[in-house]
Length: 213
Image 1: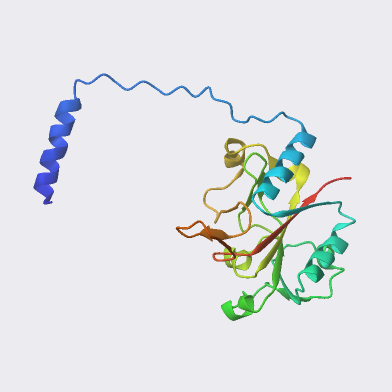
Image 2 (image 1 turned 90 degrees about the vertical axis):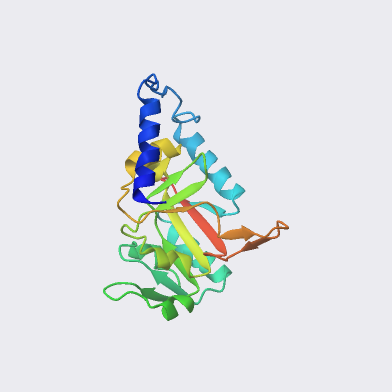
């Protein structure tokens, strides 16, 4: 289509709409959440929906988390674990796995391909959708770090990082950051609906809900 032809078409559309009534403003009185404002209810809903997406969910206190992470790594025979900048040192203090710290130098594709697991924090968790959001902030690392290793252990600070809904999550997220939205382990299905996990990311997602008690 030439430029002149396109302008002719657009002008005809403008002329046809010139006397059309103005569109009504949409009503925006819908609820931003369907969940009671109760931290215990919110945590239970997040746990339920994470599990529904085939994530394996645990609850832990700050004191229990080093032993739990060490147990999860051992259970999956993870001999190497990637560590993003800013991850609390205590979380991996009990593991015997080789820790590959991504500090001044990023782990290469080969390094990541030979790494069994990654442990990260997150930016937010959304209870109604069972979704975890990463934004490459402290303790999360770059996106490749959480997509290549076969096991992802993600820690959610349940009180501070859990919101009920997507409308509540969006104002707390920076749209200029590299956001990764995770709902369960990576999976896809072919035309016959045969589910295959681990195609586009980790085959196994272990989520630790970090509580105060």
